[in-house]
Image 1 (cartoon, helix red, strand yellow):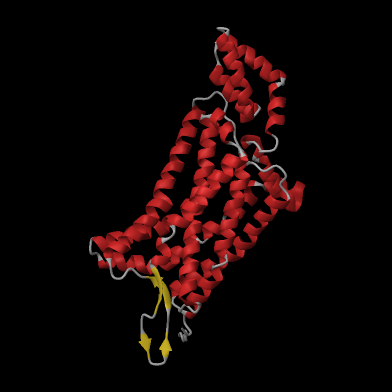
Image 2 (cartoon, rainbow, N blue to C red; image 1 turned 90 degrees about the vertical axis):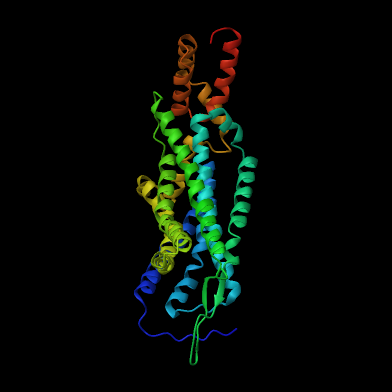
Length: 374
């Protein structure tokens, strides 16, 4: 198939906006995500669960940003020159990244929720084998959930004019309202609404737990995850709103709404690319206090800082033994056994010694209960 394209010199404003958004996203995001991958792989010696999830997120974002030059070319010449196979593959991988990103953020949120509300269970699950099992399931689900995208994407020739033949990589539903409704509802429900409800439920539970606690620890890792969640919502919400508008326009026979959704879709899709490029910028702001001291290694210091609240896989036993032998923890054990302040003690230990101290305290509780002290 040969694609000969000939477009007027003046590009539509929507194409100019799309080219600008995609170019900025690529220039900021691709080198930024490669820097994050290099930092975690080469500069971080003790990798917490948060750190490994950020690594997966950066790899997914870097790969999807590789497709940005193809879309820039598509908008510049107003035609797709790379064949039907590339049309389906590129959109499929972009959709995989959308699902992988939101479910990686879900995993981060559930990890935080377990650490605050179920510290003992959290420690039992914090193993490399469990983490890699969750990541494998997450990526398999992302590839499966994204399957409708190539099925509903085709490289078509919408019009002919003299010697001009233009092919456009575009959505195609065989003029079926059911197929069109299914695709966009599928994306919005599984790629935004359901996982985002889970994320909000986790953080509402965390907020309620911390409000009822005597000690509230401010965690750098928690702030970082909240920033990542906010950025994902900001850049993907317009895309999913357009999905909903297109479904409403199709089902309710509203041609104006349907036309608006189809016209806005290329630009909101380009805007969603910023979700893959903004995370390294967030890491720079979060690690700004390390820049003067560590130079290019500042991001390594930032990610090593997440070990304090999440625990690295390699140093758990050492930290647990150190925290258990501290005079502060011994004093608090005596007070808690005398006055029954186990909830206060547990929150204090999570704040001062980290969640890894929980297993030893649980053993002490069992011994105390057997002696009638609790």
